[in-house]
Image (cartoon, rainbow, N blue to C red; front, side):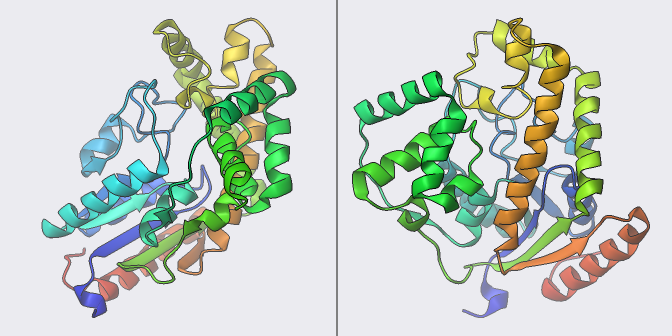
Length: 319
């Protein structure tokens, strides 16, 4: 199929706090774009501050999708994201607009850009229960260490707090003898007329931005947001409540740790998460990287990206 006959798709990836949202809005406004959230946590209603959702004003600038579609006690998965995002890409293209996936959940994004096929491994409730008890007794870090022993590739991309997916990866290995990283078939070439933009930044500068963002989240009411979710009955064991910023504040709200420790834990784990995000995206050969460390370079970088997009998608308007 000729590249111009393929459905168009732009993807913006990079570590948390690097500036993906700002760029996506600017590009979407210039190229009649619609943004599909590529974040596994922004699907949940009432979880706004900790997931760094776009503000109401930002959401009003261009159409957004896959934000606020589930309650925090509902399950979400890469397969559900793949199904929804693939459908949205076709619908947005049919409108003559440009679909743009923006986010930092690497597995979710790559499942769409390279059409992952997920084999249906059987399940073992007894094994899952045993692994869940292991996490509760010995800690999520021990569970994650066991995964690292048998499937280091999957362990690198999964946060230790993502207990559900860590258990699933161990379950697949125990039942099939295959690693989850081998169990997912990835197409060699993308089915889309694809342009992937990667934003990166010097590590110290990125870590500084992460620390500042966490402080701003606390000032904006993150503690009250977590307290409200608990008051509504959303338990700490839900996948949604395992998200960064939520899991760390729950022990504080239960009086188990001081606030300073909770905040420092959020910062530290977010920095570790950013490192894993970069590791995932760096191995994707389709990504064109732009270093946005220096704010002075940003206008030139944005102009370069716009010129590339105008050449790649000549049928779209640009300003």
